[in-house]
Amino acid sequence: MNYFELFNFTASFDLDTATLAERYRELQRAVHPDNFANDTEQQKLLSIHRAAQINDGFQTLKNPIRRAEHMLSLRNIDISHETKTLKDGQFLMQQMEWREALEDINHAEDPDEMIDELYRSFSNYENEMTKRLIALLNSEQENDWLLAADQVRKLKFMAKLKDELAKIEDAQFG
Picture 1: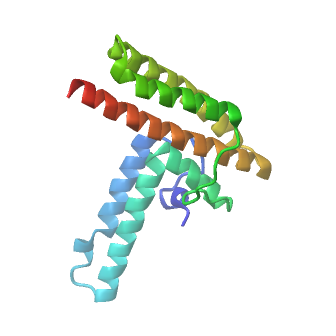
Picture 2: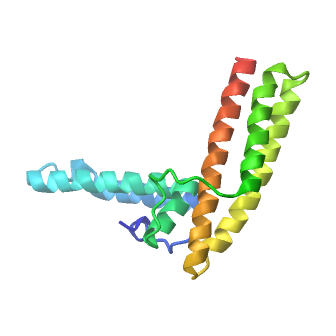
């Protein structure tokens, strides 16, 4: 299913999330099971199925990584369930440095500063990757879409690192 079409958007990474939320509420109201209380069981089941599709579409489009994956899947590049490893040595080295830094936080003189620095570093790197991802997704070249898939994989790694950092931060101040 094309979630962009479901929500009446052009397939684009740049998406107005406020408009998305508004369209989500409109669609949910239209297919709400209460509207079909006096209809057949088949109509009731169809409305429940439709509501689930709308929920899934909303969750997919509001999350930038999932939105990019969806755009790629519409181009027959599905990376949502794969475990392919990245072959970008520079990124893997950077990731190792970040992981070491995460491990060092508990022993740092100023863990607050180290945590802030890692958040800044992650954010800067993510911003650069996202700019490249947008350019690749806007391309009409299949090879660029494959490169976009690698950018999505990297962003997924970054999301995991940010989650780990947030857990460490919570433990520091919890």
